[in-house]
Length: 243
Image 1 (cartoon, rainbow, N blue to C red):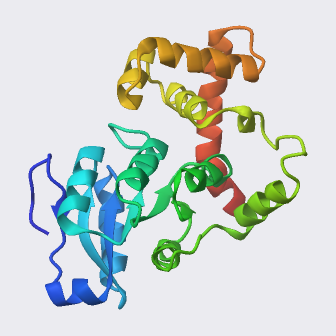
Image 2 (image 1 turned 180 degrees about the horizontal axis):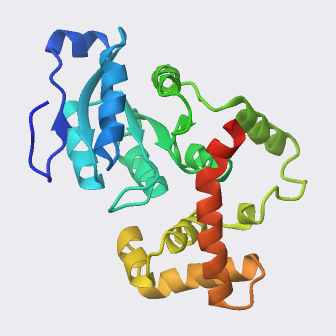
């Protein structure tokens, strides 16, 4: 694929005839190796075609406008936006677009939240990349693709109408609070989080305080320590379960 400027999405060298007969896929990830891996498996498929790649929210919206993908594969962690916000914004502007999340973050934390935001699939990066192809195909048909464990959890929670205790303390947090917790755990300052989430400093501090209270910590430092440990632990969950 030819090099392009940083402020533009990277296009795929796929013939027009193939794009019109295959599911058009937009790959969104800020790691070139991930984009290249997905591009390779998509290129080897008979029913999918890569129409563009993007590494930021600005590139995503340009790519959707220019290349009209059927399915976007997005990461939760992007340099200029949180993935849950990106999904919600895409759904608001392009309701016919299907979204699949491909992320390192633990599905137990983010899969249900991503589906609520409008995604039709969630695949962890610890899974074989072929799983992403199946998720794309399901999403293109308007079907939800989740791991069996995650699907069972969501169905059980719905059936019990959340009458059971949360399986994790972080289940008590709102999507915005969980995003702030994640970014704190990654070492971001309040100022950086505010910029990343397009919020004021005061709003970020409010979400941080709410998270602290819900998780029953006395000080912000206790919350920060928990955030670092939690972020590291949930990133390792997939590997630990498969070792």
